[in-house]
Length: 348
Ligand code: ADP
Ligand code: MG
Image (cartoon, rainbow, N blue to C red; front, side, top):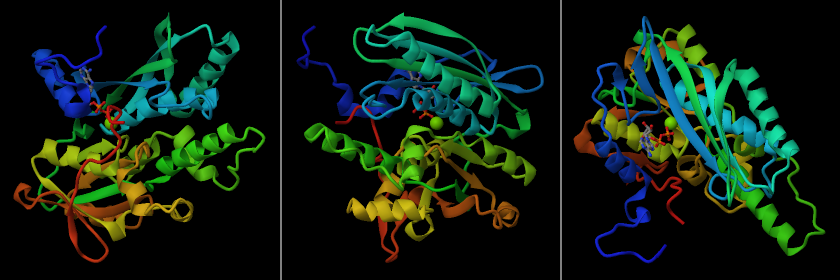
C-alpha cells in the first residue's frame, strides 16, 4: 500500500486519538434504548434487570504499549486485566468476567503464552473475576492482547465522566508519576544494555516505580472505600493516559472547567528522588506521565468531611465555570492552561 499521504486524506497523527474516536462514533452511533451509555465514557452501560451491565475493552500492543526486552510475560498478563478492570472502577462498578483475545507469532513458545495466562490468572484471583472466552489468532508482527471486561454496577452508584458541577472538589486516589518514571528507568537500562551487554541492569531500590509500570493494580479498593464512606462521586475517570488529559475529559464531558494545584498533587517520595536523578521535574511526571491507574473524581463539597481523614484520597482542585478555563496553578501561584500533553499513542 502506498504509505504517502493522499490528497484529501488526513493522517491519524494530525487529529490524534480522541478526535479519531469522535469521528468513528458518529458513524456508528447507537440508538437502542437499552444503551444507557455508548461510546464516550470509560465503559459502556447497558440496562439489566435491577442493575446496570458495564462493559469495556482495552488492547495492549507490542512496540506501542510494551517492549518485551523488559516486560516479564507474567506481569504483562496481569496488566492486561488490570487496565480493563480499572475502566469499570471508573464507572463505580465491579468487574465480573473477561474475554481475552491474543494474536501471536511463531516466535512465541507455548510456555511463553502460558506465562501470560498465569499472570492473567493471578489478576483474575485478585479481582475475583473469571475468564469466559476470547479468541486466538496468528500475528505476522508483534504480540497483541485484547481484553474485554464485563461487570455490574448498582443503578444508583453509576458514575459518568459527565456529572461534575461548579464548586465540586476534584479528588485523586493514591499518587501519580510512578508508572512514567518506571518506564523511563526501563528504557534507560535497555539502552545501556544494548550498548554494553555485559552491564547488568541497575534496577535496585526502584521496586515501586517498576511495579507501577509493569504490574499495575486496578483501583478496586477505592470503590469499596467510597462505598463504605457513603460517597457518590459526581463524575469519575481512571488515570490511564495522563492526569492532565483525564482532567480535560471530565471538564469537556461535564461542560465545566477544572483548576488543579501543583502543591496538592500527590507524588511518592521514591518518584520525587528518581525524577531528580533523571533531571525531570517530578510534577511533569505526575501530570503528563500516564498509566498510573488511579481514580480522578469529583465530589460535592458536603462530602468533604467524610473523605478528609482518609490518606488514600487527596483533594487536588475544584470545579469552576466553563468560562474560567482549565488551569494548573503552580506553587508560585501562577496559572497555566492545562493541556493534554499526556501520552497519545499516535504521537511519536
Ligand atoms: P479509556 O482510556 O478509558 O480506555 P478510550 O479513550 O480508549 O478510553 O475510549 C473512550 C471512549 O471511546 C470509550 O467509550 C470507548 O469505548 C470508545 N472507543 C475507543 N475506540 C473506539 C473505536 N475504535 N470504536 C468505537 N468506540 C471506541
Ligand atoms: Mg478509562
